[in-house]
Length: 225
Image 1 (cartoon, helix red, strand yellow):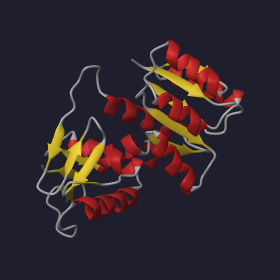
Image 2 (cartoon, one colour):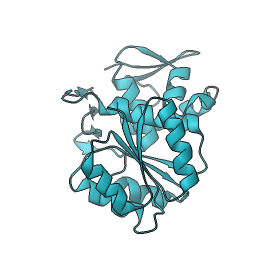
Image 3 (cartoon, one colour):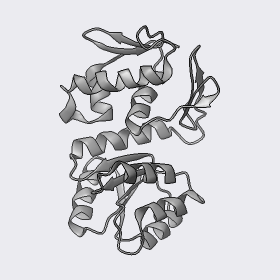
Image 4 (cartoon, one colour):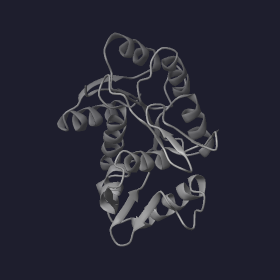
């Protein structure tokens, strides 16, 4: 199911996203305010909601909270608000990912593919992956260490999700950059180095001597359970 609901009060952006998403095989519905978005989400199956926070009738976080009362549909926030607090509020309200405007279409499409991949097929049971140091619940999108939940940023989760779903398999730098940030970031290997270091600090027993999140020099990364 590739039905996408785009919610934004900018008619030009709605039209541009509609054309782009349809060209990439998605079925698109659009809404210009929160009430229309909630009505459409309740009337038809939706795979992903792409949501602006600055809507004319209510704040986008209110839309997220009301959707979460009855739906687990993935929500990708697309907003001009750059403040970290705005991102935290949206993510805590139930959003799955957050992109700030202006944005690249390649990045948006990559984030959308990642969300749909993580969503899985209807009825698919996603595993709980356990290591000596930490546990990853792919279905609930939760990571714990020594019985305590570990807070993940959306980018950290996206990287970890790809690696954990492919145990012992080499995932190249280009694959990760393309899936997490989009094709235009294919040469930004420093992004991965920073985020992998963050993941190791949060998850590995010895971040300087990782046992599970392994670097393959010059090639990419590997998750070893």
